[in-house]
Length: 159
Image (cartoon, rainbow, N blue to C red; front, side):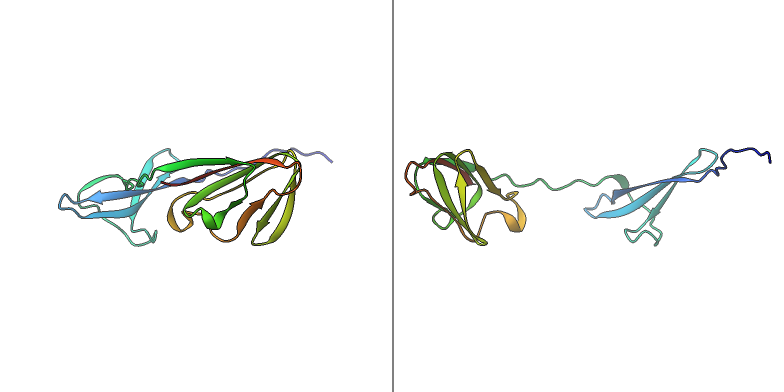
């Protein structure tokens, strides 16, 4: 039995999407969806719709990329202590905490319970600093009363 092998392919259009904004010059800016289709002949065909992707949209002004409002900048202060117990409850506005255990062991208590961090351990907790998670909350405390324990706690907070 003899035969040939090969592949069969069909050209399919390529589609790309972009959200653009239409500025009518009177302070009204409308976001809409532009779909670019490259057909089998290589022609680029743009189609504008509302953000639902199906309702046609006709631009009324200047079309461009949507500008994002600037993210407000807040100063952040850096703190640090060595061989001193530390608690999140006593440090409101904390955004990140790093514990470095240099010697001995340190007890860390979180909402989930208590752990022992041995020498050489580094633990970090943080938030991204904006929106609903702008600061660490809940239970976090560091107790280094074990003999021969040596550690550093570094943290940042909104200034």
